Image (cartoon, rainbow over all chains, first blue to last red):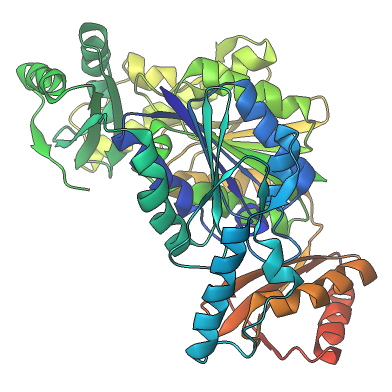
Length: 253
Length: 253
């Protein structure tokens, strides 16, 4: 089961914003047992987004999570690009429009905006690719979309972290089943990574796991993450590493 | 002039690490006048890295910066994957080996490691794709590589942020010329993004610039970044926005 993530936004490509969204999404997908194989970031450009979506669908991931570019401004073009990639039209979603209307009325009542009425820019957010299921945005105006394309579940989420996180938790993860991957994290008290390398290689040959290691400052620790389909399998690896003289302590992230 | 960035590391795909490297690289490339069009992240897998490199080269960017996967462990396979993508062999770089030897001797003298000698894992870092120019790592063991492939300048850098940043500043940027893009950043005192949208659209039609806007909390400000080839062009846009009644203040990032 593998997944891909596509984040959209010029601010990510100019370095003005660090893409913490994709790490958040990746973590949640990994915990559900999905292997995130690739993360792609493109700008707010219909052609570039469409091209990226088509390339990703070609690789046939089980899940594609897209984040960013759902807002009201001229450069929020993700829904249009996704629709074009899928050969669909953008069609108005009445229930979305109703929620957008309510959202702006609430902001108006709180004194946060001057004008509660729908305008073209606000109305635009209610257009989804034909056949898409709207995903509720509990934290903002723009709805997301859920689209089944062949065997790929496509989720289109907003880019504002608060909105994206809420929609991921409430609307995406419940559609992805229960299965969990186990991640055990350790700090190895070994002074350099190169001495650990042959031992890790042997562990990979013996057990059905993935292992990631990365130095945490020279002369101190090396972080080790063991990914396995069960706690039992992961613990076997830990036992093996300890047998080989690696001193390990649990590492809380 | 467009550029792409490829970051490599399982820790990025599991969400254990936020990819701040690509934002740093993107910022520096943008300042040099490169338009970063896409960022791709793949895991420590020869096949996946190779596939990503081949796809990127197909799009013919002027610059490709790759970061991550140069260390001594079993999962550091970036140089091998880049060599395979280019149809080159990995060949030993004698001056690199000498620097690696000196690096471990310095760590040993500081009491940070137990054994200063070269072993297979340390020696592995001295192998670069045939024809590559080594890039000096002032902060760590693994050298980078500079490869000219058709019209694409390929730079392969380490993934440890301290090492990557030093190599980017000292070895990459000096090879990328002087030309600068201008970025002016503002906070617009306007209460919601949808009212700004038609004004920004008009600015885009009138001037040869790119504009990025993103809300900075409802009821407060909207961040606006104007990208232009000159300060004069950018200032024209600012003047236009002010004429249209948008109150702007300079925004320091």
